[in-house]
Image (cartoon, rainbow, N blue to C red; front, side, top):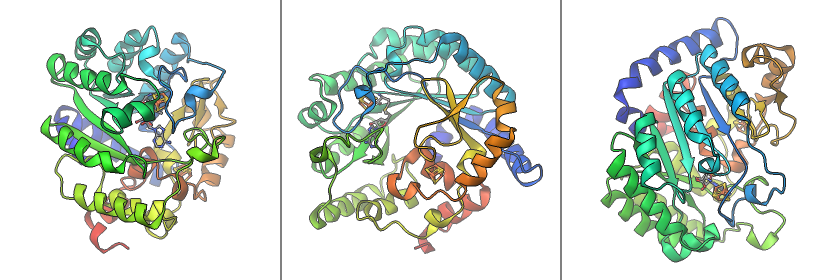
Length: 361
Ligand SMILES: C[S@@+](CC[C@H](N)C(=O)[O-])C[C@H]1O[C@@H](n2cnc3c(N)ncnc32)[C@H](O)[C@@H]1O
Ligand code: SF4
Ligand code: SF4
């Protein structure tokens, strides 16, 4: 993550101030204070990915524009530094540009993750004008594999077009290529890695996640099963990417991936009490608020019938945060959006898992 942060030096000072005041709130005031928020702005999607269940949900929902703006106002009042827009496919939201413009005025660091299918030259120019800080484009294999995984022919070509459009028309935006690691695509990942480096792009890896929201659990045959050979292949690939200088993941994260696939995640961060919800929050497409979606099984979020600040300070939210301290579900998902923040906050974790990573089992 350090590499992404260093690419955006102009907001580094703000991040340091926000991080300092988060530590004050947590240790002295004993309060949660989200400095980052993931917004699943819609669950509509234009692709049909094998490993994702989001497009299979028959109930399509998008956070209404007015509610979205209120959320951004509330996050600003809370001192939130980072907002990440995901989905579903954010580029399907018809008034997305208005939302991004609004968000960028209030939040220092704005990120979006997209499959890139709709990111044409006009969108690249618009994103440059808005000043979004970072765009992640998902790429899971070479053409044949990527299109098969993503369920729509032409997805690979479109994702690359998106990357080239951003490079040409939005050179200030940090582009990160997101790739899933699974036994299904491991053989293509070497070449993808070379292509990404050849194009001077950052690269982020996410091991395949078995959670029902992502994985098509109804179809047992689609579930990821790892043989010993698969795990050896994954280990080899991790050794290949560990020394590369364009990798966004921390070394500690990468080194845990083979353990995750062989169901042997133990010790280290997996044993720490989870305080993710004290520094992050997540908002689902139905407009409900969560300290952690996975920790609450993506259900029974907090209705936004009051300001986010008053909900977070409510007795019920505080109780949920205490309960989630005992949650161990990160062992089963290794979701980068949880794992990396957890090894970065609080600062003691940063020293332990980034600087002392070599001596931690
Ligand atoms: C849910 S998608 C939403 C944004 C956009 N539709 C896209 O595909 O980039 C966000 C990220 O989750 C990843 N993802 C989807 N299913 C996954 C799974 N089963 N395990 C791990 N990551 C997954 C995608 O590859 C993408 O990088
Ligand atoms: S991974 Fe992204 S593109 Fe694929 S179905 Fe899920 S939300 Fe859509
Ligand atoms: S352990 Fe992981 S899944 Fe559970 S609450 Fe913490 S971040 Fe969420």
